[in-house]
Image 1 (spheres, rainbow, N blue to C red):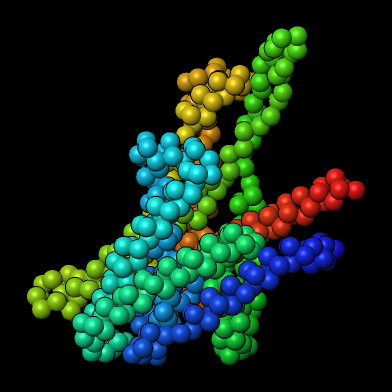
Image 2: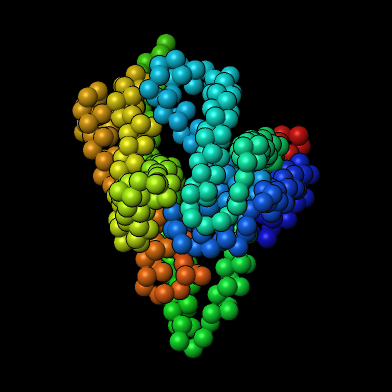
Length: 427
């Protein structure tokens, strides 16, 4: 490990990429602490502490929403735009053809994603503003039309700025820029969490805190194992005669990941489960007493940890199946295998192969969906079992952190291997 780090540091271009990435992350963290004028920080913290939904939304913003900074929305609009474009790529044939055009198609789809981010940023900025105004907590106080417009424009511009910084990291730094920024927002909370935990340590809860820390290490191990786990389906290729040569006959594997959908189902579930609570909060101050009463009941229902966790768990599993079905097409894979002379031993090519792959995929997806659902509701379970709110294991945060670390380490490893081959060739 030390030798690898030394090799990375001794490679000038890799060292420059790492320093550039660190510099952009520092800029992001500075922006995260520049508040929008007029916001009452203490009232905002009190309001967030009462809602599990807003705390979860703050996680995906990288901790910027709690500060109500100029980048309060974080990268949520861009993530949502990326997911929408990915779904549209499957639904719209022209976009699907564009995706197959290599680098040019990828650049065009990325451009459409940026365009879609702009209206989503404006809509979400207005939604957050209305939510805070109707929350019953004096977070922003009395604001006029021009102030409202300036707040919305500032928040939308902050998201676009973060999107640009993330793409700079992707192009000139190390790792996926968007993931790195979200990762940094989660990591910077660790010292604050540990500091809050130290303040509440006593002889009564010392054992509980030790158990929570042990559970955190176990969760990290499980996340790594499941995130890297896959089911390998044996594939053989028929031997064919080309001219005077005999080609084919190789044996390979078709890997199907256990966590095929990544963290996307959790993002989907968060977007859906936030909506009723936000609408309930918005309408709870209505002048109509019946509407206000119904809205208050809806808001209280989604603030109940047991009900919220159950619905959240079910939504994550459902969206895992949905997203996997959209992005992984067994029929297309079976057709490609048949086209290139590949087959699964004991399974007829074509329809039977497609059905076999779909059968395996459904079983694997159930395991992946339950895993993601358990990860999503893990903080609430730990909090209820230990009554320690300062050190609840953020399952979603751990999943993001582990995924980013694995992805970045693989990219660094590939860069080192590539440069080793380049040095060997030059010698």
